[in-house]
Image (cartoon, rainbow, N blue to C red; front, side):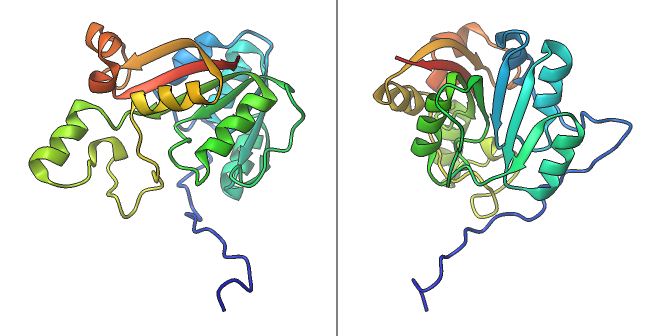
Length: 224
């Protein structure tokens, strides 16, 4: 009977992680280099939904950071730990159990649109971190608008090959949406990278009109 037992959320049991002992950095994303450049050497970092720990490994190797991770996938957690990330299995929608300001940076990398409670996760990140780095796909991008206007379907371009029915992207928001959201939560924007259609470089168009031309946004914030 509904309501008698707590209904568990549906998750993909296998995130597709594959551990290759000869190549620990099995995944790499274009935003990693910008995040790496922003982080101060020797920082204490919490990576929310750390996945297979590839970003954590990059920060450990290049910035000598002390990286903690929370990840709902048991397989992803094991791989992250093998890379030196202090990862634990955790549903960040339910709790982020660390003291206030216990990290120099909290990273939410291409994850905020995938959680059920983005406002809670973001507020908790501001609580436990001195600074927060968030990256996300901008669903206000012109290509997404064209898909909706001319093809009459929800945009697939920013879903990395998935369709609306088989993706973990459940909250679709734009650059403008996020800025308004962050400011309403008393967060101050420190740095911004608004990457163009290649998802790797910032151009004059993506800087001036990010809501229209930026495909992937990376933003550093801190509490006011």
